[in-house]
Each structure stands twice: as C-alpha cells, then as structure tokens.
Image (tube, rainbow, N blue to C red; front, side, top):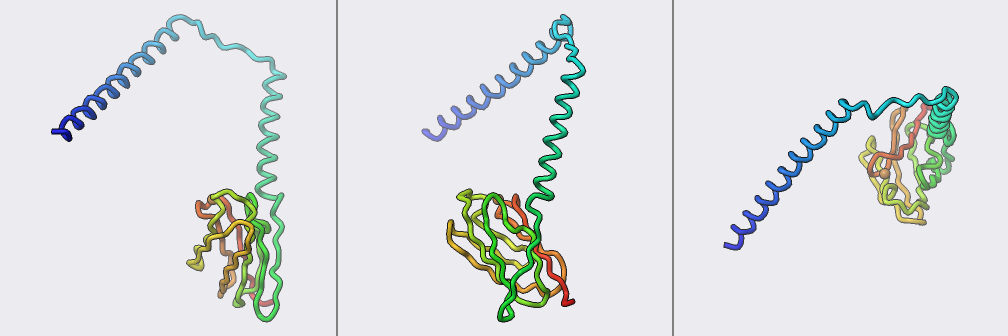
Length: 173
Ligand SMILES: [Cu+2]
C-alpha cells in the first residue's frame, strides 16, 4: 500500500515536471516570436577600436595560454643514473615538474614523486604503458619503478588524465 502511494506520488511529480517543461518551452517560443515581431532588439554597432581591442586582448590571452602549456614548463630533464638505476625527482604541484624526462632504454627507472598539491586530481599517478599506478601521499615521497625496455615515448598522467608528462627512453648512443 505504502509503496503504491509512493509510486503515484513520483508519477505525479514526473507529470508536473514534464508539464512545466512543456509550458516553459511554449513560453520561450512565444518570447522569441514577439522578439522578432517588434524590432526591439537592434544590433548596436560598437566602435571599431573597441572591437579590435577586444579581439587583440583575446588573441593575446590565447597566445599566453599556448605559451604556458607548450613552453613554460617544457624543460626536459635527463635522469641521473647510479648503480644501474636512473632516478628522477618529480614535484607534483599543479602538474608535474619536470614533465619531460629523458632516460636510457633498457635500464630501470625510478620516479620519485613528491606531491605538494592537495588537489585530489593529482593524488594518483598512472603509467598506462607499464600497467602501473600509484597513490601519491601529500608531502611524502612515493616511488615507482619501471623498466622502459624499448626506446620511445611513454606518458604518465593523473587519475583523470588532466595532467600529463612524458618519459622519453633513448637507445644507448
Ligand atoms: Cu587529475
């Protein structure tokens, strides 16, 4: 009995919502028609200088953004090798620094992550090519070891794939 009345309630609720949506839709349609009828909304010509200024500011911001993403932190760092293991310290703070790491192929690599960013976005690191992931505790070093057997680029990224870095393995020269 109780369950039934609940169902009826939710049914009524659904009906109400859909009616509201329908009415709302009709309302906006009407509004649009009246807008077209009375030419109340006329285009306002902005001065050319303002247009150019806004466009230039926009382009500038886009350029700055591009520069930030492409070049500002793009300093590749070569891993330091000792006792046959190459290691790199990576600071995790609004991304990975360094986010481009150069290692030698065929030698184990130790990545020491130090997360300083409390954002949950960065609390996990994933290395899909090595089938590995690691939780990064805040302000505490966490190490992951991998072996890039072949030369090539291997990416690593956060749990949601928003921040990325690349590990480039090179053959012995
Ligand atoms: Cu993320």
